[in-house]
Amino acid sequence: TQLLEQSPQFLSIQEGENLTVYCNSSSVFSSLQWYRQEPGEGPVLLVTVVTGGEVKKLKRLTFQFGDARKDSSLHITAAQPGDTGLYLCALLRGGFKTIFGAGTRLFVKA
Amino acid sequence: SAVISQKPSRDICQRGTSLTIQCQVDSQVTMMFWYRQQPGQSLTLIATANQGSEATYESGFVIDKFPISRPNLTFSTLTVSNMSPEDSSIYLCSARQVGESTDTQYFGPGTRLTVL
Image 1 (cartoon, each protein chain N blue to C red):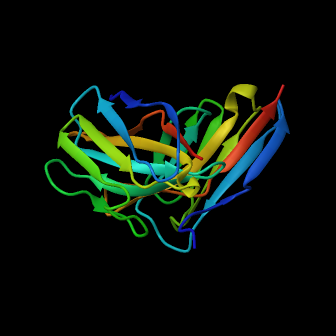
Image 2 (image 1 turned 30 degrees about the vertical axis):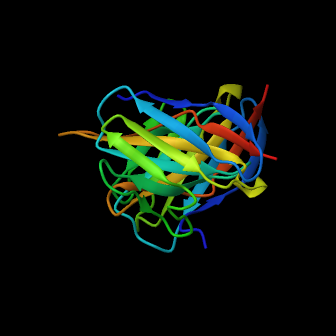
């Protein structure tokens, strides 16, 4: 059983559309991270959220941590082909081991 | 920040053989890790590479199959032993830098392994 459940698993949209990716768990976390991985590269950290209800923005990306700190969402406004990639939520186990969710594979068509 | 390089970037191997993957970080890091990413899937942590001592393996991974070395603060190797086609995967090295006000994890580009 995956500790972090992500949905949807795959998303194919047209350039300019908005989308939301979800990360859910039955456990409460002290913090949660979002990464993006492009083909042929390793994951790159986008953001860390630590406070329940926290909202962080990174250009067209908006990240939210649930009030109960058991879920998170990533919203992309006006998606562009450069947003194509694998989006992973992750948590720190034991304070130092990064454990990833199953990921959402996004494809943005021009 | 830290830049991680891996060698080889890809390889095709015969079953029953072993491959050693090298990971070099351009600066001293606190911790190093090895992950596996099977085609179309997420990353699974194999082990934490400990400097000067045996690696700490996650459930489902054992030292005989995936021996790991970390002789210093910037270098680690992962060996995939007695390979089978099920070992075909991308293997990624990762490093964590912990400072007074920062805690960031970096990933290498991965080594794509195909076992025939």
